[in-house]
Each structure stands twice: as C-alpha cells, then as structure tokens.
Image 1 (tube, rainbow, N blue to C red):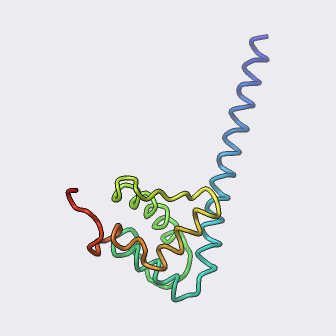
Image 2 (cartoon, rainbow, N blue to C red):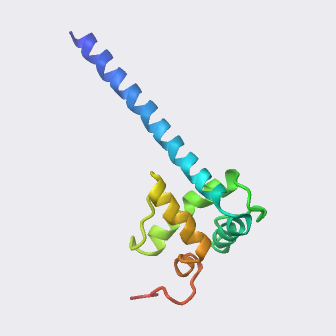
Length: 123
C-alpha cells in the first residue's frame, strides 16, 4: 500500500513538472510571437527601451533571440520592483504579454525603466 502511494505521488509530481515546463514554454512562445508581430522599427524601440536600463546589451537589430528574451523577462521584473508593484506584468498569457510589448514599444514604461520625470523618488 505504501509503495502504491509513493508511486502515485511521484507520478503526480512528474506530471506537474511537465505541465509547468510546458506552461513556461507557451509563455515564451507568446512573448516571441508578440514581439515578432511588431514592425521592425518598433521591435528596435523595445530593445532600445530595455537597453537604457542595461537589461539588453546586444545589437539593436529588431531580432528576437536569447538576449531579447532575457531582457524582456528581466524588464517585467524590473518594472514591478522599480514601481513598487504598481506595474505588474503578466507574462503567462497573451493579454498581459500584448500589453507589455505594446507598452514598451510606445514608451509608456519609460519613466519606470530609466526615469523620464513621472516617477516618484522618495514619495
């Protein structure tokens, strides 16, 4: 009986790990798709926005690669930390990713990324 319980628990944990990995991969696919849907000049704008904070240190070419992916993920965390959680980016689904990518491309997050005067220092 104990052996059956152990195997059932192990199987459930293994399935959860597979699902979590798949979910993370889907999120990255959505991030990539949304980035690549932007016109090239807007993709470069996103990379430029992230480079101002030091999160993106590669060539600003509008191409999606490992550096762009890392910068986008780090940028979401940076925005939450720098805004004291006033800005929360949800990278787990298309609506949150879309809002984040278009916000970067439009410069909406500039004040929180590198300080354009709208942020509150010491409030």
